[in-house]
Amino acid sequence: MAQSLDGFKRKPIHIEKNLFYLSYMQNENSRMAVGGAMKGGEGFRPRDRWFLLLLGAIYMFNFIDRTIIAVVGEAIRHDLRLSDLQLGMLGGLAFSIFYAVLGIPLARLAERYSRVRIIAMVTMLWSLMTALSGAAGSYVQLLLCRMGVGVGEAGFTPALVSMISDRFDAGRRAVVFSLIAMGVPLGGAIAAIAGGAVAQAFGWRLALVTVGAPGLLLALLLLATIPEPERKDAGQSADTPPFAMVLRRLARSPSFLHLTFGSGFVGLVGFGTNLFLIPLLVRRFDLPLAQAGLVFALSFSLATMVGQVSGGYLIGRLIRRDIRWGGWAPAIAVGLALPLYLLAIHQSDWRWLVAFLFVATTLLYAFTPAIMTITQSLVEPRMRASAAALHSFGQTVAGLGLGSVVLGYLSDRLAVFLYKGNYAADCLVSGQASPPAACLSAAASGLQLSMQLSAFVLLIAVLHYSLAAKNLPLEANAS
Image (cartoon, rainbow, N blue to C red; front, side, top):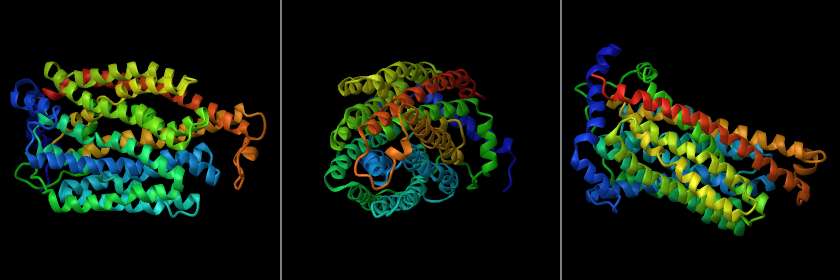
């Protein structure tokens, strides 16, 4: 049935906003659930705990398969004699183009069809493509496999966030998503430690096959044990609003736009660090791949987990006092992270790099899961998956796609500038046993400087989060 935009949006959106705002102000049970969740799952039913565990495990392998290129990237670069720009395209652009673009149509499917089945199918796809990457015989074949991983992973987050919104009340969503999102840093740690060790002992190809296979089993477990949740507050009509209607709705939401832009610029630094930290550790500190993976796990993955869990709990308490903390908290955290990040990358001792980067990353990722749940509360129920896909689109295009390419390009240009000679001819020749020491020094210094320069975009993220805080009270209390 055709519906006007105003007619469709009027009642559901105000119900959803009131649920989000009042749950923090008035619902004591939700507050107890948040606190209980942080004490090992108290307040969750056994089936909800299984939901958290299984979806967390899938999210973990989602990130393992996404980030494994960052772990074995330096080995691939030496094996195939790639530039940092090519590595950035392999670990970022090739993945992110399909991840971002296809996330929207797959989210539209999640508005209509079983989200459990969608997640199971895309999990099988990205797992298979990761395993096939290990058999790639050339850079182009590897690039195509990474595109396939992006296609699979595109359908996961929108469907997951939509399921959380229907399965849990508004007061618990930030904590639920934060707990499931612990799979991200856990996945990063496992990819770094196990992937680095396997790659060092047996080569990067076997490492890709090893991390790709388990996702196939997890997809089957999901189909067998998790039922599709009923869509809440969807009204009498099962019609999904047209995508143009979703775009018009979100275009009139300053809070959504500012939160998405802010997360995009945070993603630029975060994804860049994720992709190039291990290459920096290998080049600058001459660490073996396995040890570099362990340092990555401590300084980045563990810090991300600490930040997400503590941030999800903290922002719930802050928003009960004032909804504007939904923008203020990430603005303050990102502002504090910037100088610490610059200081970390500048260190000449990897131990100090670990210490400063741990704190910077904890701050940088403290509120990213909560931001996703806040954007869900700005739209109608059957727009949730689309809103999540559009938020991920902005974050992924700016962070993983544009950020990885810009960072790789800057690294190459700076390496060429710092190298006294013909960098391409001396350092990127295929079949060369080992590049000269001067090549490694220029590559390390170029990468270090490019990471420091790119970090200043966090100032733009602080501005957007601050503007979101200004608009959140008006959108949350609209009548």
